[in-house]
Image (cartoon, helix red, strand yellow):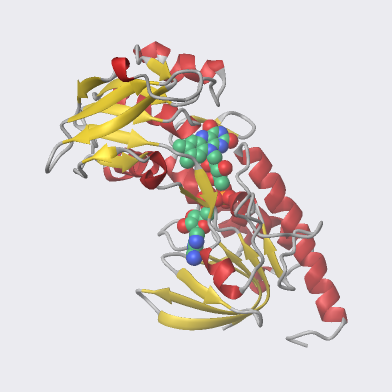
Length: 329
Ligand SMILES: Cc1cc2nc3c(=O)[nH]c(=O)nc-3n(C[C@H](O)[C@H](O)[C@H](O)COP(=O)(O)OP(=O)(O)OC[C@H]3O[C@@H](n4cnc5c(N)ncnc54)[C@H](O)[C@@H]3O)c2cc1C
C-alpha cells in the first residue's frame, strides 16, 4: 500500500493533524490514519468527565466530534492496527488481526502516538507484590470502559489531574478512597480540582506523605504510610498502617516514542520527545511529531494546536517534495 501521508495515532493530535493537512491541500485519498485501538479518539475515549476544549465538553464528546469530522471528510483510517516499525525510507510495518502483517510506503509520517504512564518502579515501595496495585490509567480503563470497580478501599498516590479524576470516579461508583497522598509539599493542580474531586467527597489530601510498604500475599491487605520532614526524609514516628484492598498510583507521563527511537529519530533526554525543527520535523526527513508524543502538553487545546501546526507543515513538505520530483512522481 502506498500513501502520501501516514499519521500514527488517532488521538486529538493525530485527528486534528489529518483535518488540517486536508485543509492545507493534501487530498483525502492521500491520507491514512493508523490506530491500534478499536476506535478513533485516543486518550479522550477514557475521559467521561468534562473539561475538554472550548465548550467544556467531555473527552468522549470531543473524540466523537473529531472522529465524525474524519469520517465526513472521507479521510481513510485503519483501527485495531498497530505500527510496529518504520524506517528512514518511510516504509511502515503494520499488523492487525484482519490483515496480518503489511507494509505501507509513505512520503511523510506524523508521529501522534501520545504518551504512556510512568511505571510503579518510580515509587520504590518496599514489601510484597500483591494484586490490587495498579496505575491510574489502568483504573480509569477498568471503571470507564470495562465496567469493573478495581477496589473498595483505595489509597491513591499522586496528585496529578488523572489521580484526582480517579479518586472522584471511585467515590461516585461506590468505592471508598481513604486518602490521596503525595511526597510533594505543593499541589500540581488547581485548587478548584481539589474542591471538585476531593473535598466534595470528603477525601483527605495528605501532602508530604509517602507509602513506605505494602502488605498482602495474593491481594493487597494494607499499606504503611509515613510523613516526610522538610528535607524529604521519612519521620519514623509517623509510620502508620492503613487497611485497604487497592492502591492506585499516578507518577506522571512519558511521551511514547518506542517506534521512533527504533527508527533512529533523535530523542531529547529532557522531554523524552523527538528533537524537532520549527516545522516540527524530526531528525529524519519527512517524519514529524506532535501532541503528547512530542512533549506532555498542559491540556487538549494545546495538543490540538500542535496537531494543527503539524498538519500545515506536513502539507507544505509534501508540496515541496512533489515539486522536487520526490517519491510518487
Ligand atoms: C485522566 C485524564 C484526564 C484528562 N483530563 C483532561 C482535561 O480535563 N482537560 C484537558 O484538556 N485534557 C485532559 N487530559 C489530557 C488529554 O486527554 C491529552 O492531552 C490528549 O488526549 C493527548 O492527545 P494525543 O493525541 O497527543 O495522544 P492520545 O490521545 O494519547 O492518542 C495517541 C494515540 O496513538 C495510538 N498509538 C500509539 N502508538 C501506536 C502505534 N504504534 N500504532 C498505532 N497506534 C498507536 C494510541 O492507541 C492512541 O490512541 C486528560 C488525560 C487523562 C489521561
